[in-house]
Amino acid sequence: MTQAPGSFPTEPRVGLDGYPPPAAGDGSQRTAVLFDIDGTLIVTDGAGARSWELAFADLWSVRADITRYSDTGMTDPEVGRRTFEAVMGRLPSPSEFARLLERRMHFLTLTVAESSGYRVLPGVEELLPRLVAQGYVLGLVTGNLEAAAHVKLARAGLNRYFSFGGYGSDSADRAEVTRTAMRRGSVVFGKPVPPESFLAVGDTPKDVEAAHAAGIACVAVASHKYDIEELARSGADWVIPSLREGLPPLVD
Image (cartoon, rainbow, N blue to C red; front, side):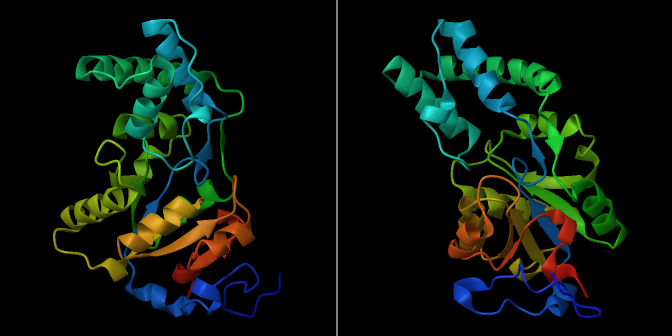
């Protein structure tokens, strides 16, 4: 890629609906960055799916492959309910669902720790401390339960970078999860923070859709299951191949 002095590389940047994205200099108004976890910061190599499988086997002696009943970007409670209904033929009672979530969290701690394919994605370990040093406050927007999010990040020592977040335990609606993170960000700042001060970072079209529904811009990272062209079609404001490139709106 070519890069002009003082500018961000232009080739991976794709604007909304094919139009050029806002100039990099508009990042001066942004103070908070909201990161997705799975496929954006880390990959657990199936630890999450395995934990659900072990939970169902432990409680009801049934095989439950969540990949058959859920899509990338769904919240944990939605995944659990859909899988339960598919393998048990009915919706779970409140007590059954409570036990399922507890067993899933129990096994997630084990499967994340044991995953041989767990890895931090390229550029993450360099980017996060750099953003903090530059004065940005970092939050999470994820379909994971709050406890599950911290289990996944703990193995890599990444929890310390994030002071707030929105989680799958807040809502089944990813846009509402994003809005929840924004409200909590305002609490951290001690004053209302306008949408233009936030930037979302994710790796799926659902991340882009949720960010836009919440009224904020989104950088899509082609770091996992979706490539640059697919993410550009999703309407992402910027698309980059990995977090090694930094975040376009925050580059002077």
